[in-house]
Length: 131
Length: 389
Image 1 (tube, each protein chain N blue to C red):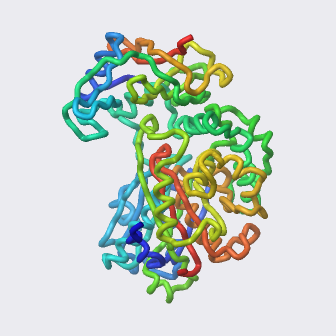
Image 2 (cartoon, chains in turn blue, cyan):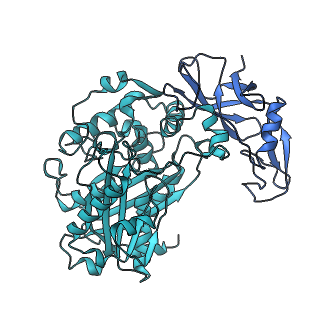
Image 3 (cartoon, rainbow over the protein chains, first blue to last red):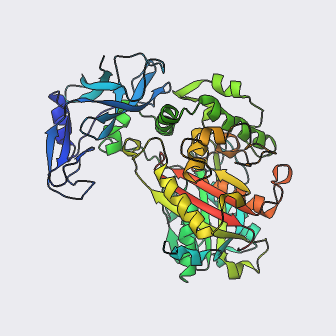
C-alpha cells in the first residue's frame, strides 16, 4: 500500500517524515482537529494553523485483527487502535510494542507516538504503551 | 415541546409490495442488476402493479440511479440514489413518504440488488490512494466492517462490561429463527460455545459474530395510504420514520460506546409513530455483527445505555421469546448481500401480513425496522403497522 497525499494532507505527511506529529488547531475556537482540512469542523472557521502535538495520548479502543485486508503486509495478528491525543483529536493507528492479546492491551492505557518508515518518502505514526 | 411536524405524515403511505430475488445465497450465474430486476419484478407482482404504474425509482449501491430504471425498462419522473450504506432503503421509505405527501409521485419502487459474494456485475469502488480513508485508516490495516464494528464492541465491553457471551446470545437466537426459514443460508443450530470457539476474525469478533456474505436482491413498492386500499395485499402502513448520519470514517465516530445516529433516527421514528416501546411486536434490527443489535436496543430506547447485552440475553429474542428479533434469521444467518436493510423491511412486511409460516410471530401488528450503514456511520428506523393508530 502506498500513500498519496492531497494538498490538504501533505503537511501532515511531511511532518511525519520528520518524526513530528502535527494536527491543525482552529485559531478562533481553539479546538485541535484531525484529519487535515482547511476548515475547523467545530466552528467552520478557516483561520486554522498546524501545530505539533506532544505525541502522547490514550488508547480509546482497539481490535486485534486476524484477517488483514489484501495489500496489507501482515503475517501475524496486529492491533488496530483508536488513539485519543492529549490535544483531543482521535486517529486510527497501530499499537506496537505490546503483544496482540486482549489481556495485554486495554482501553484508556497511556500511549506515545513512534514513527515507522513506510518507504523512502513516508513514515507512519504508530503508538506504543508508556510504561 | 413542539409537536413534531412529521406526525402529520403518520400512516400517509403504505408498503404494498415486497419481494426478493428468485434465489438468495451464492449466485455466480446472476449479475447485480439481474438481482435488482428479479426483486423488482416480484415486488410489483406482489403488489399487483405493473411497471407502468411506477413513477419513482429509489435505489442504492454500486448500480447508479440511471442504470436500474434503464435495465427495468422504467422511465421514472422521480429518482433517488441516496447511498448511506445498508440502511439506505429505510431512508428511501422516508424520502418516498415526503415525495408522495408532496404530490411529486404516487408509486415508488425501491430496489436493492448486490452480488456481494460473487461480485458479478459489481463495479469496484475501492477507496483511491489519495482518499482520507486510504491515508488515515486503510494504511493501518483497517479491514472495513469487521474491524470498524469491532472498535465499538471493545469500547462497549470496557465501559459497560458487555461480554462476548452476550454477543453470542444474539448469534444463537438468530440462528434459531433461520432454522424455521427454508430460504435461510445457515440453518444448522449453534451454541454459545460454538460462537466463542469459532475462528477469530478481529477480536472481539469470532466468525459467528459476523454476518454472512451472499448475493441477492430485495424490493418494496410504496404508495399513498389512499391508493393502497385498492391493491392486492393488506397495506403495511408507515407509522414512523427517522434517519441520521454522524460520520464516515470510523475513526471520526463521535462516541465509541453508543450509536449516535441511531439515537436520532430512533427518537424521530417513535415521535412520529406515536407508539410506545411496549407496542412493538417484533424488531428487525440490522445485525451486521452481534454487537449491532446490542447498541441498537440501547439507542432506540428499549433499555438504558450499557444494558443492551443483558437485555438481549437469555434467548429472549429467539422463537417463543418475549422480544422477537430478526425473525428471518437476520444478516447473521439468513442473507447479507452487503446492504441488508432491504431484507429487514421485507421480513417486517411479511410478518405484519402473517405470511411467515413456521416463524410467524403471533398477532404481529407493529414492527420496528432499524438499519446501519457504513461503520456505525448512519442509521435509519421505520415503525410499520397493520393499522393507522
